[in-house]
Image (cartoon, rainbow, N blue to C red; front, top):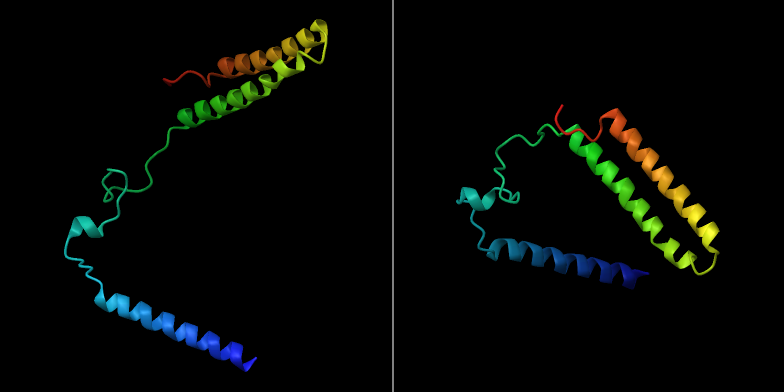
Length: 117
């Protein structure tokens, strides 16, 4: 137990000495304002961080995400075609597409797809 404690203390001492040594030797200079400021993908970091977000863009993104997931659910139906007869396949496929179209019509009638308000 003493040996484990002693080894832990030695390792912590060596790492702390190395961290202090690196901080003393490093050539960091904070004189340049551009290098000391955070990089934000080309945007001016001095502007306010909380810009107004378009709710319409968010709604379109959510609708896109929902229909994108629905398309991934449609793709396995191609493999299901081998396991069922044509009537069952067509019935399930048309029911699925009907649900999608009803959802699209609902979004359209609520005005969620109109960009300019």
